[in-house]
Image 1 (cartoon, rainbow, N blue to C red):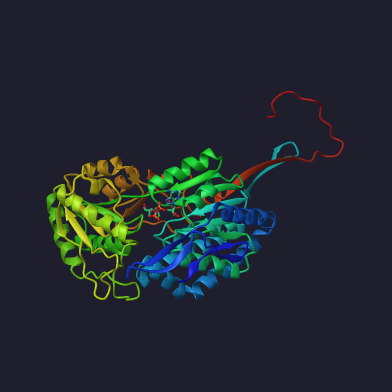
Image 2 (tube, rainbow, N blue to C red):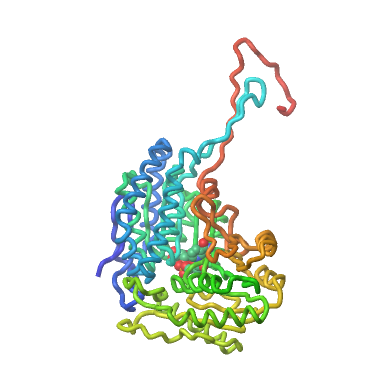
Length: 496
Ligand code: NAD
């Protein structure tokens, strides 16, 4: 069985002490193994990144950008292979993997503009013969820790920009689907990146804790579940590191009585069940305003869901694939059971889907639950599966209060034809990313991505302009070149 190792100082390193199985979630069978790095292996990667930093930091930004241009080309040339790898280990259908990869590539395109992005600020004559400017310097060795659900895109939220800014990088990808991430890192190496600038260590808590406590790591970007995000943020901060930790979500869509219901249903189907609901921006709760809207929504959703196909990644007519592990499949089914026990109505039941030829796969079918209330566990917690819950309310104010009261604040959306209502909603809702008739308002690469409340710990959002600020520190230099012959006396007053 093949083993996915680590990329350290430009070399593939294998480690046999601790190995973990990697599954094909469609067949339910282990297809390869991943090495779990020891503390010593992670320290080796940190040492390589630290050694590579001085030369990389001093490489002109335009030359760093050229590596990113070549990297983008290699990603495009090898897109099919990357999507295949994502499908084999994550389970998402090829068209969905292609969308994820494209979003990742857009972050590389943004990083190609680094000479422009790193331009500083300059003020002439802030005092007699005194000029002042601010520049943005790289931090040093920075680390990224990423989740299973976007093995290509989420790492590319981080390392292209961090490296383009002049940092060196250590990535700790998800141990559940490591192959596409590793292949992408090898393509970056092939694009001409000097050894040690980009390192990948596979692993678990041992690797993560080493990154969080080693003083040579200057900043940590994390994306994953909220309990781990909170742990990462507090541990990184306690160890003096800059940190941005993006966590879980429960994204609500308000369906107003005046919404174009057919459009809303089409959008909701894709946003709730696409990628088996394993997206941090998946719409998992539809908040219908008024019973008439709720009845129409449930009826049309039920109809639309009849043609949905769950199955293997390589069959492009499938709409979505399995969930990531057997354990997660059982967890998702457990949430559906709990909603039923708590008195909600299972309108479309995906607990036992039949997928011909893949009886052992980790499949959950699309599920629609009506009559959900805010006290239910299935409402309060992130399910991360193909489950859409409908909550009925009487007014938009009630819907907004419900969203604001939820612990998560990643994404949300409103379906309406009323511009005034949409404007009020986007202005006041306590959520970081808002859609108006747009179900998955994932910001493009030249904006930044981040939720509010317990969906993000830290101040700066991921990628885009915030990413440049996160991966650099400002230095402000004040310089005087007095004209010859001018001498000033001693002054004890504060300079003004
Ligand atoms: P996860 O939190 O289990 O794992 C994320 C990373 O943390 C992995 O690399 C994992 O190895 C590591 N990790 C796990 N347990 C750890 C521990 N005890 N100590 C140290 N490190 C640990 O998340 P996941 O299941 O891989 O991904 C799904 C979650 O990620 C969902 O909650 C989803 O909402 C969230 N997510 C959020 C965003 C966002 O932008 N907000 C994007 C994608 C995914």
